[in-house]
Length: 332
Ligand SMILES: NC(=O)c1ccc[n+]([C@@H]2O[C@H](COP(=O)([O-])OP(=O)(O)OC[C@H]3O[C@@H](n4cnc5c(N)ncnc54)[C@H](O)[C@@H]3O)[C@@H](O)[C@H]2O)c1
Image (cartoon, rainbow, N blue to C red; front, side, top):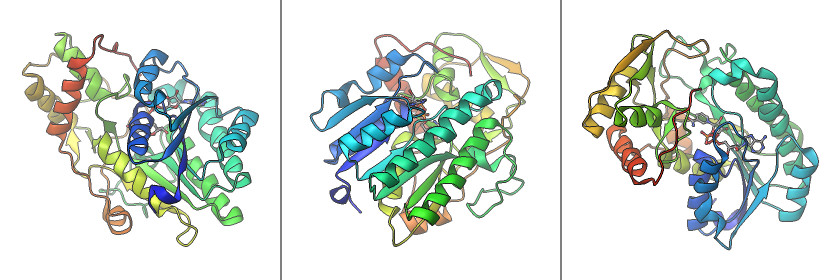
């Protein structure tokens, strides 16, 4: 598919980190975008207003300020704007806070997803992409992680809600022929990154000469993925969401895992500063490593990440330095 066959795309979480990049890209590609977001205070809503500021002035963009837990508001938005495709990114993200508030994570990530799936079926939506997460793999003993690996042992409520989202989405394909494609995103970074996530947080702390917390001994590794590669992958998932091809699950990662220690060294190189490291214990809910097997994504979606970590961090660093007021560092 191209956007010609999905002229109106509803993007949930449009004001967030990934959602705002995706929205900008869709608008550039000629789509009409309905952005749904409740500007929740998981981090400063002013950051989200800034993320979406360019899109907000675009004549093919409509902002719907609504909470996906509000069934009537979701249904009403579908009736009013009649999207033909949905990319569902709105969620409570973040592993560690989900341990404190599993009820809230379940309400947003699961009940909210059900509201969107129901509204999509009622509204005759043709394509649906659901943002899942690499966290569903838990401490998978096998690497790289393939979509065929068992994912029955999540180690955080957040991961469990994402797996549950995939499962409930499958039933909508089976019962209603809604061709949902689930994208398992691997640690995303780049300009506008959520302030609770490591790379942006570390860049700010190093620049300020403050110590950076290093959880564990630095040997844990993540498959960092630059946000432009994720946007390309989500659009490929939208293409793939097709009644002829049915339900699908795809990894969207960098497929180049980097240890925490090596990531910090890259930050030092990019900023030209030496990091002061504050050793901290491993956090409950954090997995030891992530690593995407991209065999299926490459074969079916033509997905191939293009941005190396050092280049992506350099772009994020340039973006941070150009901000009038750097976003504050938050903990997760
Ligand atoms: N950033 C990553 O590394 C990463 C990795 C794996 C999966 N994901 C998934 O990608 C998606 C986007 O993540 P992000 O990093 O851009 O997060 P984000 O927090 O920046 O964006 C999420 C957006 O959803 C909105 N939102 C939250 N609750 C809502 C509700 N009840 N109703 C309406 N809107 C609501 C928020 O206001 C926010 O703008 C999420 O589903 C997340 O789980 C992200």
